[in-house]
Length: 116
Image 1: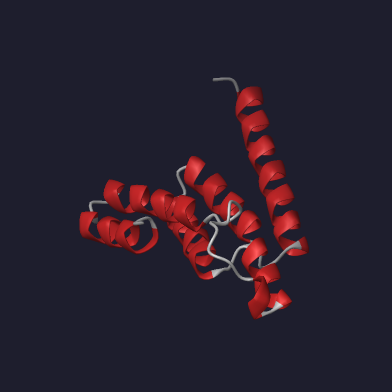
Image 2 (image 1 turned 90 degrees about the horizontal axis):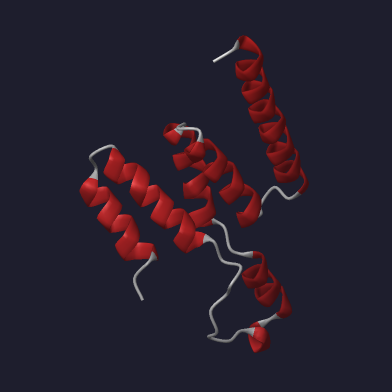
């Protein structure tokens, strides 16, 4: 591995995170922005940081859910929300927990968020 290619990878990672944080600044309570930050950290092996963002996704309503809540009680229905990223975040969180040996914690997250 040359010094130049190492620098290029570091530079790309820094630029990528700058873009993700900029987007999260524009949409601070967006499930999408939080999930993307968690996924980026997870992909780079920064599991301790990914856990934080995945937990925030689990606590944040999707954009469609917020729109329905703003529209009032007449707008709600029982159709699944395709923009809701909580299941994806819970699954990724369970992978991190399993990799660290916390199988019971992984099972609890899946049972709470991914069971139909």
